[in-house]
Length: 156
Image 1 (cartoon, rainbow, N blue to C red):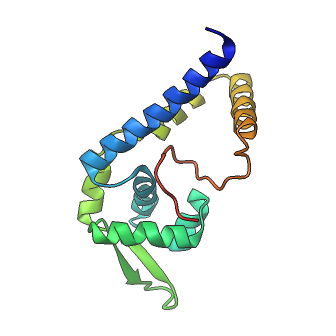
Image 2 (cartoon, rainbow, N blue to C red; image 1 turned 135 degrees about the vertical axis):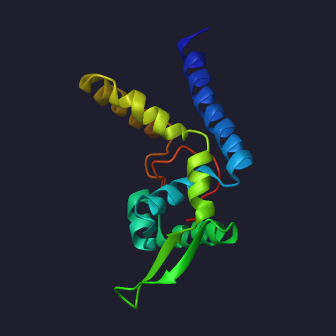
Image 3 (cartoon, rainbow, N blue to C red; image 1 turned 90 degrees about the horizontal axis):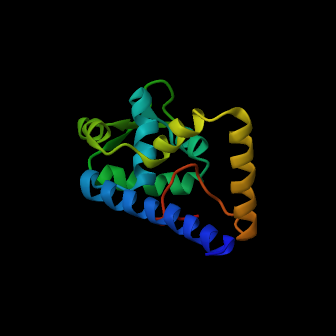
C-alpha cells in the first residue's frame, strides 16, 4: 500500500472511532458527545449560563440553546432564573444529569487529551501542525468546530 492509501485509512479509522464512541455514548447515556460536553461544563459548578457554555465549546449561543433544549427534555438540566442577576438564566444540572456524567463511558476526547499531554512538547507541536494541515487539505480549515470528537449534527 502507498502513503496515500495509508493516510486515508488512518483518517477513516479516526472517523470510525468517533462514530463508534458516539453510538456507544448515545446507547449508554442517551445523549450525544456534544450534549455530553455541554453537560460536563454545566456539571463543573452545577450550573452555567448559555454564554459560558458557548464560549467554552466555541459554538454559537443558538447551538447551545438547541443542546440545552435536548438536555432539558432528557431531564439532565433545568433552566432557572439567576439568583444574582434576574436578567440572566442559569442552566442547572439535575440529579439525573450528574448520574449520566458518572456512568457514561470515558469521553473519547479526554482519552486523546491524556495521551496528547503525555507527549513531548515538540511532538505536540508537530501533531497539531499536521492535523491543521490535513484540515486545510480537506478545505475544512474554516469550518466551525468545537473541541469535541463527534460526527453528529451541529446546527450553525
